[in-house]
Structures are given as C-alpha cells and as structure tokens.
Length: 235
Image 1 (cartoon, rainbow, N blue to C red):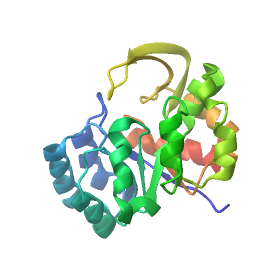
Image 2 (image 1 turned 30 degrees about the vertical axis):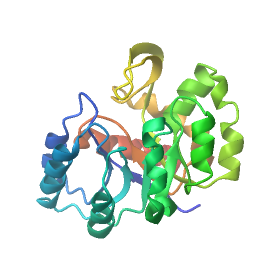
Image 3 (image 1 turned 135 degrees about the horizontal axis):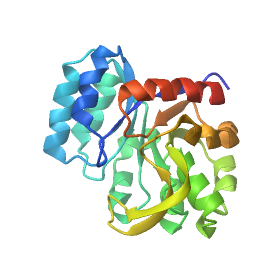
C-alpha cells in the first residue's frame, strides 16, 4: 500500500476547543484535516463552516457524521473540500444515514463498542468499515468484549475506507458516553498526554486504510507532533 494520509482532526467533543483549532489552521499552515462535528448542532455547524471558509484550508478528506446532518452539508463538504469518505455510528439513531442513497458509496460504519446486529445490517448497505483502532484495542483486545470476536474476519472481507486513532492509557476511567450518556469503562482516550500512548497502533498497521484520521482533542500544534510520531509507526 502507498503511504497513508495521516490527518490532524478538528474534534468537537467536550474539552476540545474547536474555535481555537480553527484559529490555528493558518498559523500552522494546515491545508487538510479530518472533521469531527460530532457534538455540534446545526447552528454551531453553520458557524464552523463559516469560520473554516475564512481560512486557507483546502481539503477535508474525511468527515465524521452526525445523524442530523442535512443533505446540503454532504454536498457542501464534497463540493468545497473534496470530502472522499464519511463515517457514522452503528446505533439506531444513525440508521437513517442509510437512506442517503446518493452518498452510500462514500459512507463507512464505525466499530464503536461492539459488533452487533445493527452494525452487520448497516455494513451490507454502506461502502464498508471505518476502523476505530483504539476501540478495537480497548474493547476487543483488553476488555475482551465478545462483540469484537468477529471483527478481524469482517475487516478481511470488507473495505476499510477510513480510520480513527486515539490515545490508549494503561489504566481505565469510567465516564458517560457523550452521545448515549451510558457509563462505560475506557482505556482509550480522546486526549493524549504522552506520545507512547500511540505505540499500540503498530499492531494494526496492516489494517490501516489510505486515510488515517487523528481523533484527539489536542491542539493542532500538538497534533502535528503526533502526526510525525504516527508516520514513523505507520509509514
């Protein structure tokens, strides 16, 4: 495989200052990134798009969808920023994504906390899998969630169109999922403190697709160092 495209991620989860990240784009000369408007309602997304248009950003190859995103947003992101791939969550609220027939060939379903019936049903209709490597390491390898037993076989039989990489800690924390509110035990983390928290990625290099997105709340200045570190592991 050719060298992977490793993208800094503009995340919007709690603790990620997305407006500040927009301000970093021109200062750091960032021309392409992955966009995670996961926690923004429509009006905040409109604000985000407006702020991005005021920068020199050229490409957004990968976008993490929300279930309430409207068709004009797909068209806008594809038309203005050349978005190649979208991913969505395997939960009941996201199944509506499968009704967006004109975009299905760009849409990939994310392995989230386990591989269940919803995931498999969606997989039959969309373009393939968005591999969240930290969830696989956390829920599958460390916590031995049986829902992950078949993931490797699924990845061998389906296209992996994009992926997320987050940090992995050597201890777990319990906190509510920012979408469902359900309390879950996590070793993975959307905030990186030490570059060694990325070393686990080396075990999964053969499964990484052409587009690799950093899903961390760290500043873009920090993410550029993270990108360099990942490039040594991945490419």
